[in-house]
Image (cartoon, rainbow, N blue to C red; front, side, top):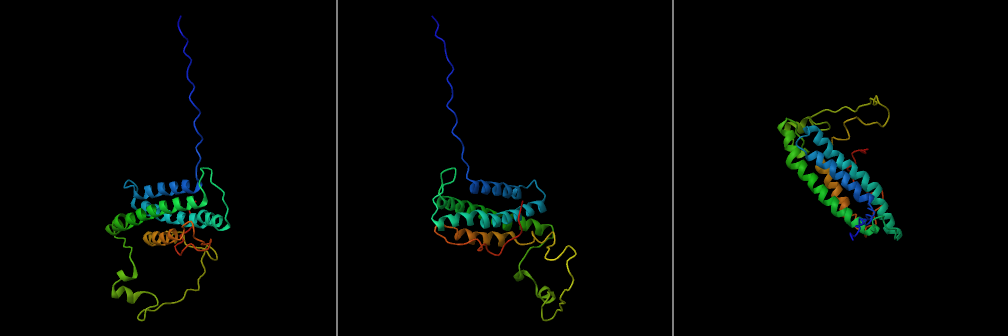
Length: 202
C-alpha cells in the first residue's frame, strides 16, 4: 500500500517592520552612491553630493527633532520595528557619521580635484592671491556699489543655482556637528540645525 505524501505548507513569513528614519537614511545613501558613480557626468555627481547635504538638513529638522522631542517628553513610543526613540537616535547617529565621512572624502579627494581638472576651482578665501583679494567687493583698494535692483522673480526669491553653490565639505562638517549633538540624552530643539541649509530636496 503506497503512502500518500502531503505537501508541507511553509510557515508564513514574519512581517517586515521598517523604521522610517533609518529607511530615509538608506535613501540618502543611494543618492550618495550616485554621486560616487564615475559613469555619471561630473556636474551631476557634484549636484548629487550637494543634495545629500540638503536632505540631511531637512532630516535633522524634522525626523531627529521629533525623536528628541519624544526623549525630552519621556514618551516611550516604540517604532514598528521595536526601537525606542533613544535606540533610533543612536542608530541614526552612527549611520550619519559614516555617511558624512564618506561624503567629505568623496568631495575632497574625488569631485573637487576633478572639477579643478576641468578648470573649475572651488576654494576658500585663503586660496585667493593678493590680486584677487584686492579685487573683491569691500576691499580697501576696490570699489563696491550697493545694489538697489530687485530680483525679477519676486521678493525674497533665490537664484536657481544658489542652492548648490555651497561647498559640500562645509555642509558635511556642519552636519557632523549636529550629529554629535543628536545623542539620546541631548535636549536640542528644532531650531538648532546649523548654518549649512542649502534648500530642500523633494
